[in-house]
Image: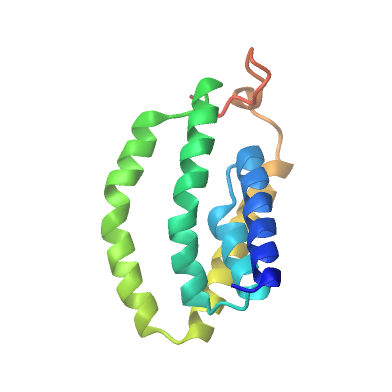
Length: 141
């Protein structure tokens, strides 16, 4: 790995960690585009690399948020137990598709989520959005 690639990887990892800790995203949202745009990885290599890298980010973030009382463990376990089947299918499909199709699909998913989150953020706040006693936003436990 060249020095510029190493610096880029460190910057992507740090930025994704900060954003993940603040708003709960970082893996797919920052790792994948960062790896594609700054480290010149193919879409599929960036997605695959992100899947492994996000494990550490997710564990640290979940541990820290659990200390604030924001972790919904039952939901996390349910999603975690059911996800591997989807990951296996997704890996097969992603290896069969052209890189351009993967890039467009990834961008489309990000746009859909961005639009839905933007609309949600602009509507009137609900009581569950209030701040809990530790000063960390409650996430509807």
